[in-house]
Length: 89
Picture (cartoon, rainbow, N blue to C red):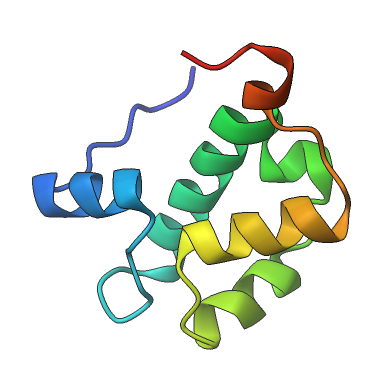
């Protein structure tokens, strides 16, 4: 059974805006935010797409926000976003 993670309200708001940086949270929280954002935007988790934590860790250490990473990854691999096919809320 998966454990539901709780996020501090400030981090939640930053997640929605894609502004959380490595100095604000741990790598594990940053990774969770990134994979959650990917699930929302392309319908697949990081594990589904790649699963290599080293790529994530380098982006985290370079102080990329989850949104910056997702933007880069989606563009690099020309992924179709949910909004492009009418699946967004």
